Length: 198
Image (cartoon, rainbow, N blue to C red):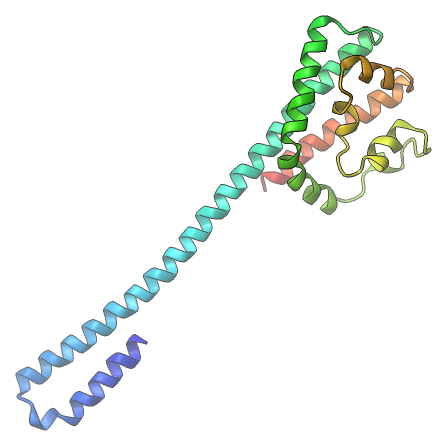
């Protein structure tokens, strides 16, 4: 655009060159090219600002995604630690553990709409893992968590309304399966954060 203005203006001036004083002709020539350069700079600057705005927006989205991934990982580790202690206590929760589970239960329910959006993207794009063929019986805990609850594998452990209900569900499962599944979910939570940080 600036080249057209500059070239067009110069062309017009050339046509009237003989009729204009030399000093006036040179002044007009300078003015036309200055306007053309200013227009060129404004167009380039505008494009640069758009790119900068796009980059800032993407960086902000990346930071939000990473924070949500870290929040999910940290809360899952808290739940993992609680389940491990319940195993040690032979599924007899303390009052403190009841309160801790209640807090985690509501955190997951309140925040799952946020983290599930990016969890689904992560889970969809990752390669099939070893746990998907482990304990593959329909009745196995692995199947219930990773197949029946494939949209939100963590929900199997945080959806029961009380820690007593969670204990009732898990104590009917073989301990090696419980330990295996919660360990695999922990590995996935770590992998999730690494993925979100790329």
